[in-house]
Length: 227
Image 1 (cartoon, rainbow, N blue to C red):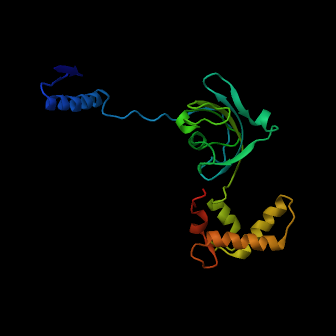
Image 2: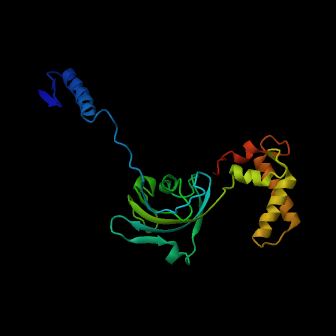
Image 3: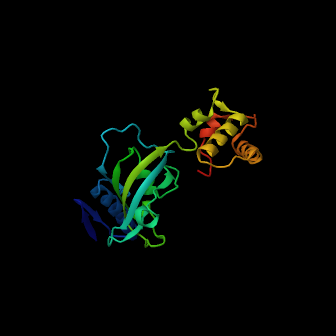
């Protein structure tokens, strides 16, 4: 028995020969394919519109405010729209922490405020074999996205520096409490001193890994399991 693959003639005349042939056939197929594995599908990114001036680009850990519409590639059905389904309100999400589908984490990096992108996301980077809601299993998805605003993420160095009032590279309970008070005031929320004390104690219990009474820059920016 003989078989020729890519110019290689493989022969088998015995059981051992047949086994050797199977091994050689596999090796020959690898040679024919250039010895490389088939790459996994990736997100296709199209920049539809980009502002002339871009003061800041998105990076992992940033919070992004986006308008978007999502469609099934198979038949063009729209499965969600922030314009139609969310009272025309954009949504916030944090980039790079698996808060959204993998396709968004990969496809929305280095984006400018005002920029519009189209993403074509394969099933492996979307909802895969299970699907979700209106999205059938193994669906390739198309997203039209418009970035409205970028903010520092909750564990960014910029946020740490904003909270570190005396620039000593560690946060005291007083500094964290002052930051929380300012945030409550900015959002027009009532300030309850007792609740703030409880919240600060809870934050330090979780974040002050070495229990020295301060949250260091490393402790603050460290990506915990919940992220």
